[in-house]
Amino acid sequence: MTRETTCQVLVVGGGPGGYVAAIRAAQLGLGVILVEAGELGGTCLNRGCIPSKALLNASARFQAMRDCADAPVMGLRCTAPGVDMAELADWKSHVVGRLRGGVGALLAANKVRVVAGWATFRNAKICDVSTAQGQETIHAGNVILAAGSIPSGLPGAALDGNVLSSTEALDLEELPASLLVVGAGYIGLELATVFTRLGSQVSIVEAGDRILPGFAPALSKPVADWFERHGVTIALSSRVERVHGTAAGCEVEVRNPDGALTRTAASKVLVAIGRAPNTAGWGLENMGVDMTGAFIKVDAQCRTSMRGVWAVGDLVGEPMLAHKAMAQGEMVAEIIAGMRRKFESHAIPAVCFTEPEIVSVGRAAADAGHLGFELVSSRFPFAANGRSLSGNSDVGFIEVVARKTDNVVVGIHAVGQHIGELAGEFSLAVEMEARLEDIAATIHAHPTLGEGFFEASLQGLGRSLHLG
Ligand code: FAD
Ligand code: NAD
Image: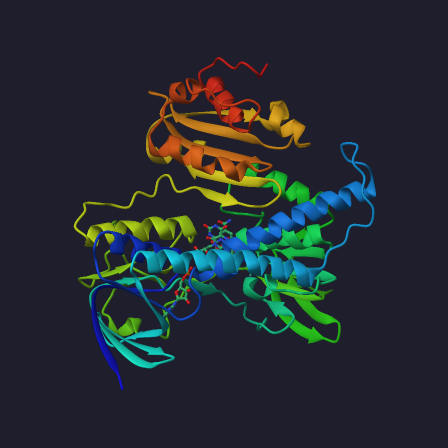
């Protein structure tokens, strides 16, 4: 028998966009149902941000051990470090499980009713869910779509045991002897970093003429240098055309920039060429919402073209980042509850957790022509930072971009070891429209990477203390 229910807010998808929307709507007194077909936490928690960062952290420790085994580093030596991939995978799953339990507990504490099952919309406000207990039909006052995204496939390279998307790569319980990564974007490079550190022979094929095309060349260069130093080959302006299974793994056909086709072998191939919004198979076509390209079209309040239907996160376009999804989810819940909100995207930080890490928020110096006002930029190198050098790294810099007329900080771009941790301070400065004088008047703890931000700001004001 079909169960019929009603709610004020129906959220479809329990990823960062959906679960945050559900919690906030419930906090504001609305009756909320959240439908999730897979696991709470969505892509980010179960097969994205968290497992990839767990493996990045573990692999960084292993690399440090291996370095000390090759030759003493900072006077430290170690012998025969090893990695147990099955135990590593278990540990990573434990971290994910613990956080997933936390999301479930938060939803329960806020009295969000979670329905486990696949949602299919009959029309904009009526949704059928197949659950283990049978069919449930939900009639909703408001609908928040947060169905996320899926990996884009590569024609000629169907996923199988040896051709992997990030989902399978994050679950490997055996270290591949060699890994060919297709795509030098966020996923390709973060996972190339993991497997290089763990000891696989990694090669990368990228269609563009440089790695991380979304970041400025000065930011991606230290990352390219790290890969080169660690024996990773990167084929630029090249495309993988076909992957054949062999007894030993895969044979890969690569179209080189000169048009020639070369064949190369790898135990595993990781396809990381972007992600597509998850818009098929759940009745979106019955809801009457407009699209923009492959994404659901929304306005600055995440309203779709259908009254009372909202969409957030990866479904609505770039940047496909968890913190953007959460910010949109929170905002939509507040708008439904009657608050006045609008989505501001100018201070969304982007962090790439490679070696070294990259952070970018706001405008680049090159945007001046497009903005119509003059910008000045100033840089502080980590080679002059005590925290960085005492952590055995002299690579990278922090660049601050400010409006020339009033010194308002409009962008901050940095590359360096552990620099991702400063993303919050950088976003705060851009969001609050801090001036260089505000950063310079803030006492930054010594010795920290944040002093580089302080010094870059001093330099912008023409009064550096620690730069000749
Ligand atoms: P998702 O997290 O994709 O959640 C959508 C949910 O909806 C899923 O749980 C799905 O099961 C459910 N669903 C879909 N359709 C239905 C249906 N019909 N019925 C019921 N349930 C349904 N972002 C960062 O900011 N930082 C990072 O470090 C980072 N690392 C990443 C690493 C990897 C390997 C990947 C793949 C992604 C990473 N991302 C990262 C991106 C981040 O995961 C996404 O931007 C984020 O998860 C998007 O959130 P969302 O709520 O829009 O969708
Ligand atoms: P991406 O868009 O970051 O990179 C894809 C890369 O693949 C690009 O450099 C592109 O030029 C290349 N490419 C495309 N087609 C190709 C082909 N046929 N052959 C060779 N190269 C090809 O996408 P992604 O790395 O798959 O990540 C997807 C999304 O997930 C990202 O856009 C990001 O929003 C999110 N993500 C974020 C983080 C983070 O915040 N640290 C980490 C991982 C993923």
